Image (cartoon, rainbow, N blue to C red; front, side):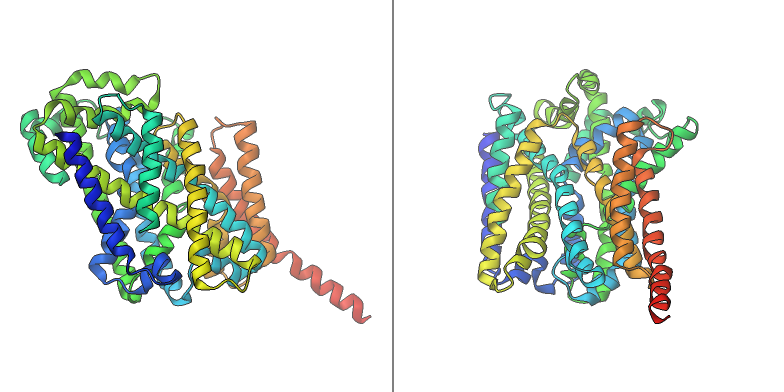
Length: 461
């Protein structure tokens, strides 16, 4: 009965996606919704982009394991990202009237940076997309009582998400679980007694650097991402783009604490589930919430929870796949075929989508990380290689092509060398990479100019 109800819910969701796909007539419709979304829809799409599998299944158990300080990257960093985008980047993004964020790098720095950053940003989506596929596979495995293995579930999820993307009730659960756990007061008191509200690091310099790096990775490392760019530029005007990002971030920050609350309450009702927090396979601790719902709640709650979870995963996974495929098609493949028409572009986009989904599937099948770690690691590469050129290109007039290239290469090199030589150093490798990227931008943009002037004066003599 439960499986049939959830499958029906899934089919209805896919049917809605197929119906909506009838409105896709060109590449701008497909990628940025024709720049026509009103505030309520823009806010909803921003929220849906962030509120995915890791928010429900992974962030919630990270809190139960490590407290508030353990989730500094998400939701604190991810919500702050949307605030920063709204206040500093949304207006600039919208006014440029571009299809992808890769177009910005081409317009500001040239084709070399367009190609390089598009590849970097597209690769960064592998971890994000793999996290969504892992979550959906986990749902299938849990619902069938293990009859479908996690690996098989991940494969099935890739097929479902691919079909949904190509064609383009949590509060009630919390209330029921609250009653089962003895009320809000008991749940909050249990979290407080176990030290889960400790936010700031309690160690020394190393712990503070790690805390700061985790926050910055999502707060600013996720800014140069195609899905963020898409949500901003899909708004009907600048004011909607700014307000939608702000409201989406606020709604996300508030709502992500609902599954956190449910997990804390669930562990009070069934303390035995806490053994999963120390499971040998880190991915297994993400079973706490779905296992609790499956074993301790009435049928209507099960249908409501898993239906809402599937909806969240599908919407986030869809955006996570469209973003890198649009980048690859527009900024890597299209320059090779300048006469490509819009129909050919859409066909190519969908072919690339299949290839990227296959790559994310392979990544998901071979990764043993939690979804929380997958998402956090996904944004490290854009933090060290794409953020500084983006920010400098908007806010620093002297930023040039040489500075952008040196910035990206220095950031990547600094990060990789630090990660290989001293991964557990006091200053984390991503922070070293970010520093190298900033230094590279300044050096690359300023040093060539005196040299060029000297060469010019020498030629005149």
